[in-house]
Length: 259
Image 1: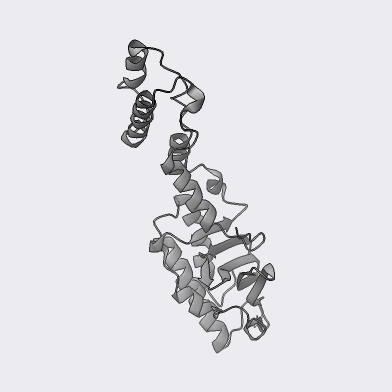
Image 2: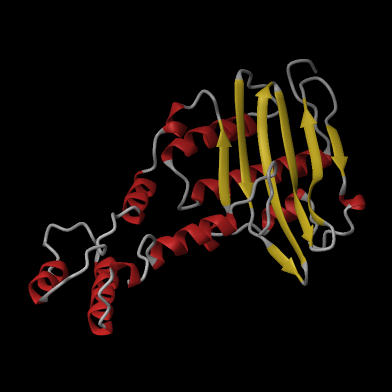
């Protein structure tokens, strides 16, 4: 009837999977309070079906890790969004192999508006080259946020909380941006003591202090007299590891790049 959605068994199975995905997202330790606001909007829409909840524009996308199958690499995403009265669910990803390069693909698209049947397109039959192709419910069932390998992308123009900086990210960025402390060449024992004595008020944590002490000790024992001969400390091993992890895990359905 007008003013309500019309679903069949397949539609309900997809909506159940979408509901399960949103529930998993809310339990992820990495989700922020601001993101929970947008997720709650989608949960509200799905919980009130087949009634219509108008006036929302929200997208929630979960981006999975890379998977390797010999020379082939794949990655997948799962997406739920509402725009006005239209509800949509989709999944897809990227496929890469050295001989052909990388290419994005769509696994399925589902959308519905009030008063009519849902539109459904399943492209799995044309994706035989993707070794781990799955339906939307199968993909959702395999998502494990506890692994730390999944990322969340949310678009909600009406949620200003999404623009607030994450305090943990700010702290990690500040930690990774510690100024260079080891660019001074000690010329005698007195200068060497000044460099190696770290003030108690220093913001360097024990890990960075240990690295700094190792650099100074190695430099002093090597007999070098030029600061240019010291190992570069522009990026600490921990900061570099964090950048490497973020870079290797970041996937986008619009710009999927493999190194």
